[in-house]
Length: 421
Image (cartoon, rainbow, N blue to C red; front, side, top):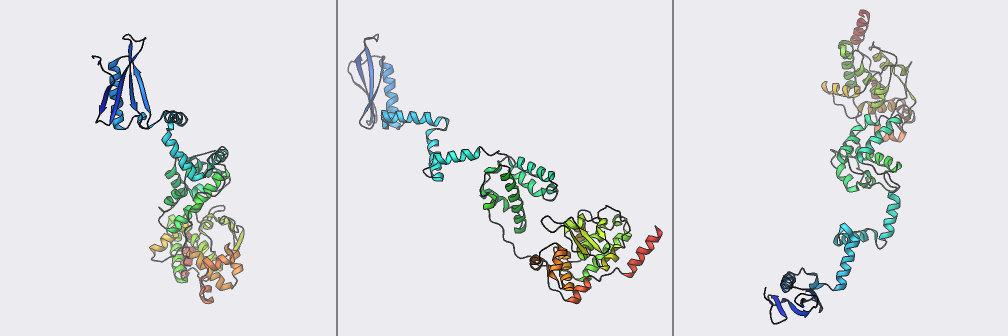
């Protein structure tokens, strides 16, 4: 490229953006000259660079003008002090980058106010005390701990914890926020189910906090609203319907070999004549019958466990229909109450939730007139009896519940079958 005879040489674009090339003496250069490119910084200052070959200097001038025209050259808007500051910010921010670092700082100031450093120190001191674990690990450890301490949590409530574990499997338990718990709970079909799931997850998170997997303070799950349930209807059934159910279960016991142990009949007797809860029904063994009393020691956790319940003559008469009784054997194994309710529906009976216990307590209070006595027998407080279980019944109706005896024909059938064995 020929070297111009006149300097400065102006390189421009659109007339607004330009750089000048000056020829200056340089004893170290082969030609004895060097070429300086100068351009305005946009703040009244001037920036420059020097090259020993004119063609190289012109290429630099063209590049500078191009960048000035597109507004991407630092020299267009930054002073030397600005450039030094930007370099320092880049070094401090590292891989995060200055822009991202400033956005994080802005967010930190919104959360912690002016005391960001103090807040970070506080968080670090607490975080180092935690042993962070995933939801999968927490659920496994929780269920194992319950089993070690004699609780059947995995069996009775396992489906709730396993579903939660499946949803949040690899998430750290301490990073799940209240709104995430809220969204998870709202997937439940109804308020009662949602309330039950929330209750179990509160228990799980409190255990995790106790084990130092979640920091002290209000739990995120506790920040969610507790579903408010409508007052449950106290559903009772008539003595006639209960008698129909007892007769049907008695016939199965005597005539169907697959029901010869009387599990459905026992479930009906323990639920309706003794008022046991579902789990208590499934826990009773034949040894628990002590003459005219039933010893209950396998009750719902948190309720009076050891109690004696009177067995009415009608209940004893129905129990006589069952011949296959074995010491140490359960009277009504798991799911017997569910099977009984299913059998009742097959008979066309309407059986409200918990109707056997409701009717027993309502009838027992009607017969004795003593709520305190019945609350001891039922393993509840008098207040709970009034709130959840008792529906006022006339004395005659109440007495008729405990006078449902096996039909003569059924008793004779049982006697005849016993002779043939």
